[in-house]
Length: 170
Image 1 (tube, rainbow, N blue to C red):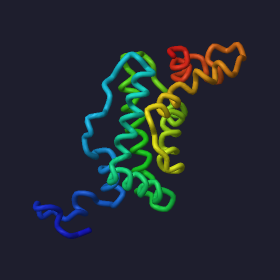
Image 2: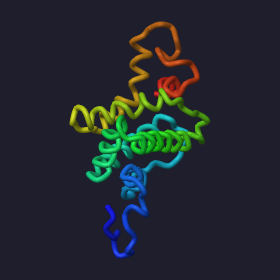
Image 3: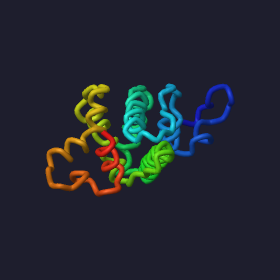
Image 4: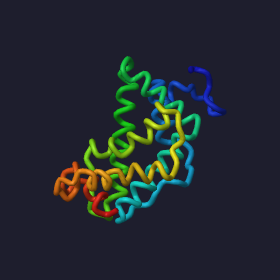
């Protein structure tokens, strides 16, 4: 890693002091695919667009490899653990910025429930994340509301939460 980086003559380790820092930058600063959504007031539409952007980003082989490498090292390497936390915090804050026009902000748990199925499908199931799958992820709270029949306006989601808002908006 100490060989000169590109034509600048700078060693790689001076630009990225750790492997985790390199992978962190690769995940967050990966190629601009032009798919990152604009802020909006339609929460379901923003969530759908963001999940499609996530799908596009982790479909880039270098980004996918970097994300998996940081995740794999996080239990044993403190730098990777910090990088993974920072990636999550960055994406969480970015998603909430997209929701600002709607007046809705989501919790950590709601964010995990939103992106979790997409990453599980890609990394664990090794399956395709289709538009229909993304629509189902966003709509799942609506089906829980109907199936629950509990008289609660939002099924199992706390009233006033992001997922409750999505359920009511569908």
